[in-house]
Image 1: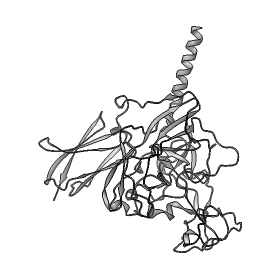
Image 2: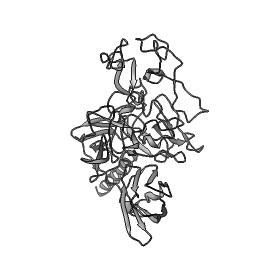
Image 3: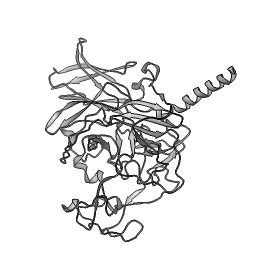
Image 4: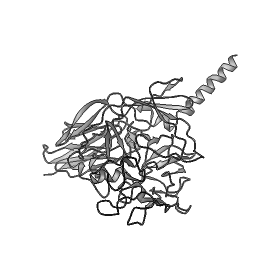
Length: 451
């Protein structure tokens, strides 16, 4: 009996250890930090009451449960297309598969609304914005709303709703804040295509770093992980770091009367400056690539490969961008899932679960050793920016001292954020010391204020 009980205990311990894989341990948990948002015309964010990031992670032998308000730590808004909504608490619990499996049958299409979660609990949407062209007269042309009626020329949200995205490339749908694309700020792209960050500075979940494998930034509704834009060139983890590339290309068309297979469909608007190629999802076609180009992704926008979190390999999606780091279709997941889509929103948990508690920061590697921080400009005149290259998953304390040791400024970079700005306009010219700490390791650098 004792031997049998010991066996059960060992099995239970093994199960718990096995269950605590990346889909359990990677979520950014928080119960104290609140969200913030901008309103039009005010460059100072307003503090919200909704708790940011993920509040609770629990798991069973088959599922992981994520409780979140759907609000990030980076400021949201404003949404300059007239969207009256703001990011509001979703008070949601999502059930996702602990052990995702490939769908060997007909691929499941992505849909409008949530198709995944980023590790800060914010929703992932696919390419669409819920508007499609119909009989050449719809909301796009000031006429009746096409909605999803013809299901042919579906407007690409990343293109059609760019004016409505905040600095972090997100916006709300009836309060449900979400990203359709790579969750990195507009002003961090190599070619900046939106000026919203000029007045409403924010950041995003992570910063693109072309020299390192991108962090794990989320999970799709089939349970497979989502990574940022850069990864190992070869699927076996060799070949250096390279940008993951979409295998979808713009079609060579001037009129919109057929789909990519050549089948005649309901006509859409001709290609023009008003409706350029890429304005609709159907403007793209998938072109399979050969094994000689392993950094090109499959039709689901992913591949099976080795990643830092999955050294034995996993199927993974990637948030694709172009050479200038502007978002590239199909952006994250889609237009179909690789795996069996089983995730759902639940109101109750009807099985025994274990609550996952993140490791004590003192027992894990210092975050300052795993993400690089850039301080710029230096010398500075008005502001000093601290930019994290990668993902910040613990609070980084930022302190500025004069040479007498007096603390002048104290701020933080919050988990799930990547940047902070120090206002130095009131400081005298001279040298200062900038100390950055994660509670375990401290780095100090000299900065110069120059008028």
